[in-house]
Amino acid sequence: MKWTKEFQQDVLEWDTVNWRRAVDFWDVASICQGKSLRVLDVGARSGGLSLLFGCAGQEGIADYTSIVCSDLSNPSETAGPLHQKYGLESRVSYAVVNAVELEAVEEYDVVCFKSVLGGIGYGDNKAAQEAAVRNMYRALRPGGYLVFAENLAATRVHQFLRKKFNRWNSWRYITIAEVQAFCSDFSDVRWRCFGFLGTLGRSERQRRFLGRIDQIFDCLLPDNAKYIISVVAKK
Image (cartoon, rainbow, N blue to C red):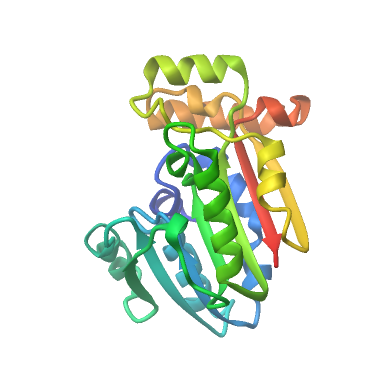
């Protein structure tokens, strides 16, 4: 897929340099190659990940890709115009899905989300985060993939600034160890961490600038200092 600046913004929405690296780690082309897939996009908001997987099907990376774009309220009004822009109307449907209450069993080949677990754990509800991942595991067919990129607790500096400046300061940021525990039922799990400075930008222009610095210096920082984890977990 060709990642134009416009496409990158449409898929990722914010802090696009660092989150692009996180999504690239999934290797969507490899997951989708030659397969007919049914995909569930959880917590889709504006439908960026549905767009990503829809374009994989549209461009022949997958034989056919059918996507359920879901959120706590039906995202058709917020995500529909974006998908129409890229001609994906026939590939995407919309649904109300609460991951904590998801009852699907072996219905999907891929379940994906970006920056969702923190909201599920709002008010320090780790049990809800565990339940959501467990339900997504159950919803996958054997050999299916859970792919996600999520905000990490990162350093005390990150935690202090979030409490001071973020309006969603009851968001529950996860740790690497918790991710490993959440995904313990999967047969194979790969993960990688990204970003230190990018989230500190107060505008998207600043975040892009800081994200480019992160690209250079990430290799010098320990994983627990970074604020994004990207995961590919195979059932």
